[in-house]
Image (cartoon, rainbow, N blue to C red):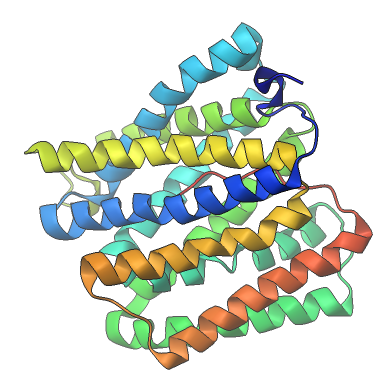
Length: 317
């Protein structure tokens, strides 16, 4: 089948190519977070403004791809309100995560965020009436325990801001469960477009409402210099390109095969955190990261026999 048909619809299976795209996309995504952290730490740009650029550029970049591959039919959706709601959720989660990145090491924030598969499992039981056997319960409990190993030293040093990646994981979990429902009638590429649009509109409204209130992270500053504009473009480009890579990967290989490779994000996050900020996890944090990764992979493998309905690919944060 042609490449045009593959994006968000269907394709012949090619597991090796799917895994390659998943690994490449996962290694790339932390560069988005690195750019956001540099903008916040080094250039004083508020998290709300960085988030607006991320969603606005995603919307602008995805629209021509969507129209080229699916035509105007790609803009049609049976449930536009729910599609836009996903953008609202991801916008809130992104602002929270970017605020956390200003204070926390990159690898720590991303590792805490990776409790998201455990939260999706819990929400799927509550709202989609999926079964949760003893193995899945154990994986969820152990995964949260691993997150606490990473959160605790950050909470002692930073206070409640250390919980923001956990809040992001909660919000993204709801976003993903909604995506599972919407993917029955809507292509992944269309979902991606409406996520960008919903996020952009949400942050526009929030920034307008917060103008002049003194809430630092929701104010606007004038971007100055090519470095700032370049970092903003990197964020928008990766938010778009990485997700297109994930869409293609999920069309070429089953989610149960691809999901463990998503944890490659922690590898590149650790590398970028060390190269750009001099951060490196201590042994206790490495233990927590290892527990989170092992629990997430265990959830994938315990889910395989049940042949659960697979989630659509998520958007990079």
